[in-house]
Image 1 (cartoon, helix red, strand yellow):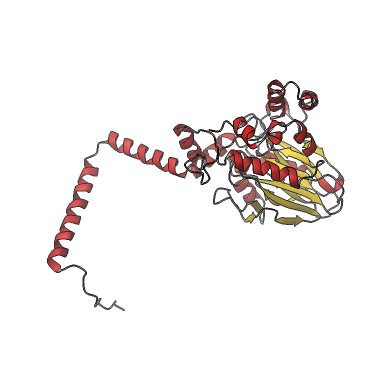
Image 2: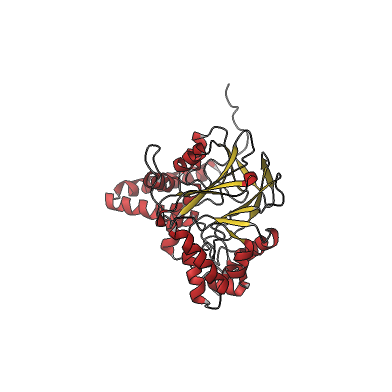
Length: 374
């Protein structure tokens, strides 16, 4: 089979077309000669410049220029913008995983303060707090959630960024992990997804529908207030842009105990006494997200954050406002728990609304707390 010759007339007369072709050939030849003439040093500089420009362009750090509503956001310098772009690449994920992940046959690195795994909650909504990643990111937590009366021992895991300690914890509790929830794409929350999915065939990896290609092994996206069920456990996603544009809080309840306090896994959006740094969103977006949580989550809802930052953040809250007696009381409780190597989680929404400066702030105050340009 041969393509029939085109019968369309050439847009240029033959002599003109030949001149254009000769000019194009000359330009290509000159460009190729210039490239071949580059020294090794110049090749290196060209490659470095191209790489830096690429990382700058893929970086999703916020800025007034990038925010359509010109809303307040932190001032991010060029180096941080480039490093943030690098942080989102496959190469960074592989390198960080090699450096920080616990091997299958080695003991887990001790977290700051020597935090021990803890199991808590009623039978219908059992939660195991698993410290992971040692001191690399200030103390991360992954979570296993299950129903003790489920004959199939089905479980949910949240942010298992160091997969093998979490897999061992699930094995100790005789759990069959079916769903993995990712609060946002940062490595210290999603960096274990690929390994976990490889070790658990058929695993459902779930994140916000605002994540676009940055959560490894993702199989499902949940819209705001969309729900999924695992046995008698019900998971509701809450979209909370701010720390990242795709951040989500996952609220988990049990149909077997509807009156029991729900559990909210907040990642880096809400900590005990503070909030995660604004990287991709604006202060107005974060304020709207926090208001959404105040409206949707009951006062007795338990807050399980992604890091052990409570002592630091509550200390800052008390220093900035010595009259914040609720923060002072909570700080004393936290320090008592930490002395016994227990995690400080959970707090409750009622507590956070009483002492967390970010939760109580007006839009203008929140912009200042977040270090935004005004």
